[in-house]
Image (cartoon, rainbow, N blue to C red):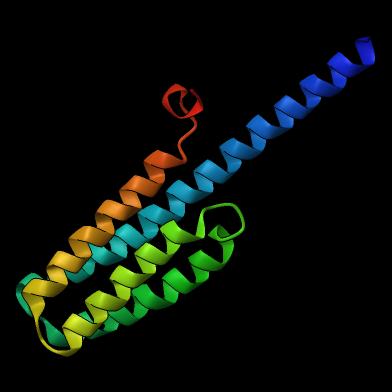
Amino acid sequence: MKKEIIISVVIVIIVVVLNIITQKYTNITMDEISNELAMIREDLSKENIEEIEKGIENAKNKWDDIKNKLVIYLEHDELEKVEMYIIETASHIETKEYSMAIQSLDTCEFVIEHIKEKYEFSWKNIF
């Protein structure tokens, strides 16, 4: 009986520690991509075309790197939504529809914040 309790406690501790590690990584990476998107949004409001194009390419590349790691432990649907809105933003930028690009960026930001909240280690998400 004592052996089973020790094993159970160790498993719970491992799960909690791994959850904390993955949550921190998720928050850091989501903040990084949010910062990239915020810089693009700023350039869009200034209509700085050269910086906009560089920024969206950087954001797409950064997202590809981030996604390859997050796909291990997050739902693919959530990650696909972020990727879809980044690609949608890029297509609006290509067609010079900057107001639509800003809307896509805002939606992408919302989805990113939703992912951070959804996988947060809190009582709300446990029960």
